[in-house]
Length: 547
Image (cartoon, rainbow, N blue to C red):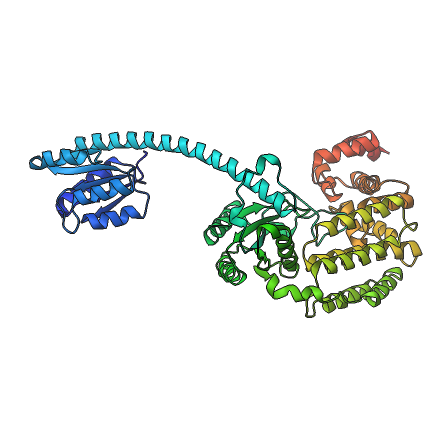
């Protein structure tokens, strides 16, 4: 049914209750029905929105039906109206029909007449809604087209470029006033797998930051609230960077000052935090003429927004007017830490490098907080420099793989915690390579011994690589050097040798023997065994038990 909400207005309680009871029996259970005792109460409920049909009596106290009809026809012309009238009011009712009433219901009314009128109103409402939706679709498309052109023109201006000729018709007069630029950032939920900031060597995990991003519904709510807060602002979406979960939008706000925007956004942050809607905002200084200073204002907003780096778990509002002095503080010298960390890595002192990196992290968190871009650049450059010390010591493939992974991880790193988590793991892997190559500790022999002890368990190459901070490819090559076969072949050898022994020495079921040897799928165990020996496990048992 197309009718979603009906309002019945009648001051006579018996007639009102009977009519509402009849209507309730005709319409579906989900149709909302509200009862009013006069025209004033009815109009107040209609003003809240959502009403499709009004059924009203003529004679009522406070505000009668005729005044109600007049107000509804003026303010809500889409609402269908059924007027309740007595026979003696028929001529009166006919004049009301010319003023916007759709139909009339004569007292005393019959159930079939009520049903007929409701069906008629339902059809008309359906047709009206379909026509409106078609018109709205066209208007939305037109609006979106105009909006896209506007956003393209504004994006060009923000980047300090002249808009293409076909977009220069966009009226920029509104921006030719004092104002500010706000850059808003938030994360969305992304279901693809990426290497997280807290990665494990050779494995891929879903990033915790991505899992805690906003859902589509939450994102819509955030954007809607921003539109309500800044109804006269120009919203310009920004391109994504390496972090596929990150979304940014620039708000160009002529006529708005820094203090007001900070107050508005802090209030929004309080509301959103309770609903776990995290966002961060960078606010530029007030520009004398926003149009002529768009690139500069965007840069200021980006600079202060970068301090999100230190506060990824809570909403943050960063104002250039309050923070511009921070940019003047130089990056601290970390050469002493670099020397100590490099020495710990080269000598295989895993615990020492962990302590040195933790001390450096603590030093960088002291007030005043250092400019995030400088911190990220300096720390990542230091770690990559230490990784490069492995050049010529390990295979070219392992070296290239580790270096490329470092570049990829640092490129997608967006928080202080991620920066140090990535750095620690890269240093540990480098430390493992140095100790392996120097002969202080044979990590591959240790892994082979572990496999011999745990080959019946579910152990993957990537899991073993995690234990010694090697890449899976590098560990595989080292195992082949030691055993003369690939990891998979070596594991299969250990398992099938054990299976042969159990087949000959016991009468246990083949499926149970396969499970004990690490094969949870008996059919897979049979295929592997046949491929290895040219006999099925049962055939092998018969042949070798006769001997």
